[in-house]
Length: 275
Image 1: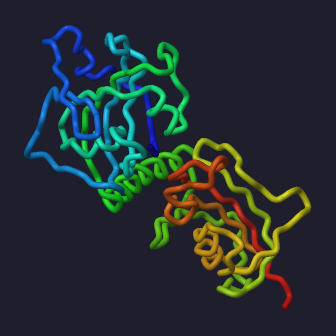
Image 2: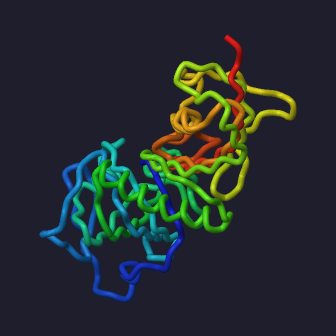
């Protein structure tokens, strides 16, 4: 199971099953036990690779709450018969359902920590309410729209005076050198740089008095936004920029240092090297 994002939210209504009518779980051919609270047969269904925007509550068999989250999961092929991902495949948008799952299989095979209140060799319930289902392209658009709001808020908070290029990079020149040669792909430059995140956590920077020798367009970095920023600069200039995740480390990030969908803040000065 691949967890993309997760934030604790208000307990969803479907966890209040202990107060409702007795539940009679059905069973799939693989042994997955399930019970539908609501079924929206007209709702959109998904497939492997889609992202499910869901409310989750895990309970013991006696409905004591273990944890609740609002999260996004990327649906994968089931790892074992009766896996959670088989359950996702049964759900439509706006459906809500509960699944009985093995503690050992669910937490062990998905490399998750068993929460307090559960014992090995036991079963627990996973209550799921589906808000939406997005294919990978739709999800990228969704994350980009969220990111743009965060970028604008960052610029406003920092009071930057930025321009925006066609890829969505927001940048501001701190040192201007009108006499310098424009930087081009293939140029070798000596860089002073600092990478950070929107929360101001520094990821990496050149040491004092040191530089990084870099050739524009080379595979020395995965951050395509670095090249896009440099070609907007001239020799001897300094700039800072906010780089969208699509021009940085992408949807996967660079674990464990850089989370998925990370927006980078880059400050860089560039001096063209003699050839």
